Length: 106
Ligand code: FES
Image 1 (cartoon, rainbow, N blue to C red):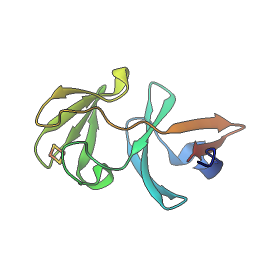
Image 2 (image 1 turned 180 degrees about the vertical axis):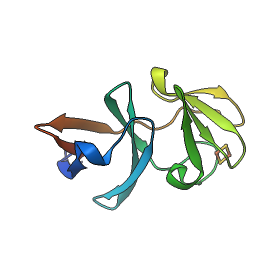
Image 3 (image 1 turned 45 degrees about the vertical axis):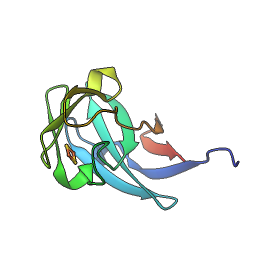
Image 4 (image 1 turned 30 degrees about the horizontal axis):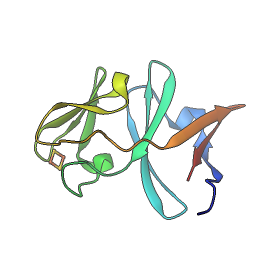
């Protein structure tokens, strides 16, 4: 199994507070969300059904709501489910910022 590699996905200004930004990194769709200044990254798929959170998701406060069925995830607790129908947390992906550039490790 190959080790994850870091990929440049943009500059910090492309990821404003409270918005969901989708990117495709090495063939994998991910979303990045800036919450209280810090970036979080997850696979771009709801854990309930194969629905893209970059299309059906909305950030409200510290929560990400999937409007396909109302599933809600806590962004302050690594995407933990706080309202079903999803049973599982979001799938986290490693991201980082360095010198104003944003990287995702896949
Ligand atoms: S697909 Fe997201 S809540 Fe059902």
